[in-house]
Image (cartoon, rainbow, N blue to C red; front, top):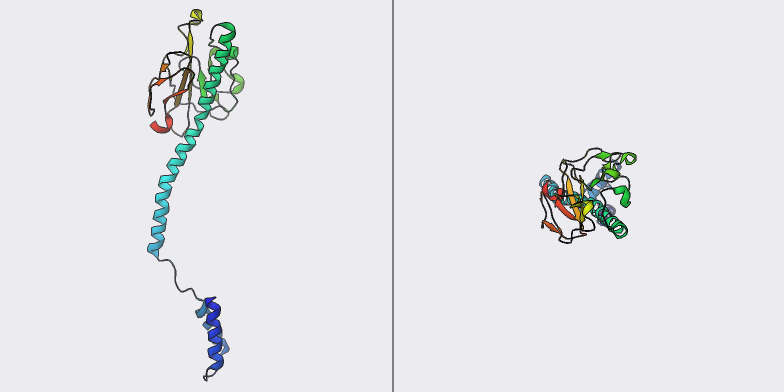
Amino acid sequence: MGGLFGVALFVLRVRTSSNPPLPAAEFPNMMNRLFRKKGGFTLIELMIVVAIIGILAAIAIPNFIRFQAKSKQSEAKTNLKAIFTAQKSFFGEKDKYSTDFTVIGFDPEPANRYSYGLKTGCVGAQAVSARTASAGCIGQDSAKFNTAPAAKDAIAALGVQPAVANCPNCFFSANAVGNVDNDAAGDAWGITSNPSGATLAGTCGVDTTLISAGEPGNSYNDVSCE
């Protein structure tokens, strides 16, 4: 609107002026001056905007990565609860627990990020078709996650305790370990059926070292520790 108003004033001035008409060659230059932008951003202003964007990115990006990593931990919690349910169902029929995933019917979906064990030291990348479930260890899916983290046992004594032969006076503990970010450390979780709960081993980045029966516990929080 301001530009059009200026043009109108210019035309009115030319028509009412006693001076000679403006030469045609000068008319485009006059129009350019009328419509030329009056101001812009200075270099300092642009630098301030860039600095603000950088500060916001420095705050937001790490928080987003942390949130993304925490969402990946849901796999371990879900599958450990599935192991607990499967073991309890098996115990209801046989009055004992098992160290064989095949016997209790636990078989996680392909593309699993975590390794699941009913014995210590269970970690590694395995093809889905070559899972060692009968030995109480299912490795992470090598087709999706080929590099396994270092072994971490969330609970020191895994499997059936004190032994399968002692059942029904027995309990079981299971483990899950996987990588949820880009470092070499592993994220470790455990679950137990021990009525007294279990003490988590090698804790880091967690707010408790004791878990109750049937509740997954995070012993080494890869999101907070590395």
